Image 1 (cartoon, rainbow, N blue to C red):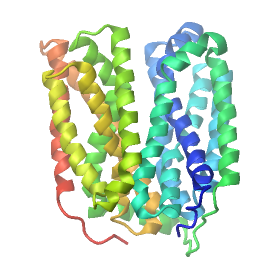
Image 2 (tube, helix red, strand yellow; image 1 turned 135 degrees about the vertical axis):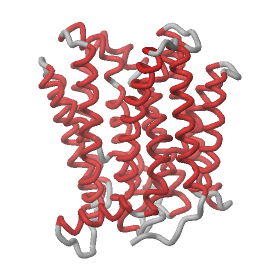
Image 3 (tube, rainbow, N blue to C red; image 1 turned 90 degrees about the vertical axis):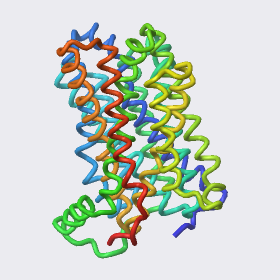
Image 4 (cartoon, rainbow, N blue to C red; image 1 turned 60 degrees about the vertical axis):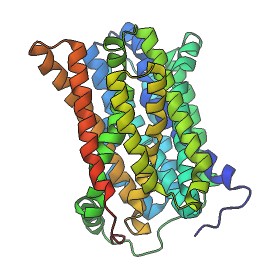
Length: 406
């Protein structure tokens, strides 16, 4: 029921969700900026730093199935408010940490705490906004995440001499508490009114989603387009820019800002144009098809360096904004009551894909260099392999969907 579309809907519904997802994305990328301080102050090795950073993704991924079940049963207000308090506890623990074990526990709590931020927002939009507005709202919420990534770069680096990395996490903890209280007080309650069933019944429903043709239609594209972008954004873009395009570290970091600005512009474009496109019959699936086709072409252009890097990486970020539409497109192939479980299943595939692409590209680079290829050639072949996987993953999206699965 879409009964919240009055003048206060933006402040009551969107802004609380936006603050939560802003924090989620900021905390996803913050370690890139504070890593020198962590290694300098605490003496962490590169391996320990990688392990510490990955605990966020591990906890986030493991939480997706129970979070999806909870969102459908208890609604986004209760689930996200509670989990953001877990985020605050994790940020406090991280701020106080003096050892890898304590820092890792804090980072894991943060990953668990923000695991519902995007999915709760999408569930809320499905409940409280009409279908023609959901692409727009998804674009706007993803834009708030892009803002978090931007703040976690140069602005955070600018305030670190004043706050220190521990002070920054105390600020994050306070913001997480504010977000939790705002969500609890502002959002309508939306507990399921249907029969709840047992935990076993719920898990059987989740298992049915993962093996359904409707889900499998989106699984590969979620892994290799959404997960592939996450892997490039968080890891492999910098080696490419430095070894293929010849940038130094500072120049590669500036290109990452360009990439994130492109993502922000793309999400805002979907936000502002989504309703108009929906009224013209251009829904989430059409956006996915056209966007992914363009993404393959843009990445081929990056591969062959057919334009200035700033233009290509901005376009890559801009058109990767269509990744947000995969959650809406997939959910419309299922009954509305399954929205939370379907969207978190898609999200799990995206994070699994990010892990697979990060590790797979790394393994390919090692093998190619061991066989005598230069780092530039190894990166080229590995990136081409990712584009080929994306092209194959795109094919299931071209067939028509069936009726919504039960």
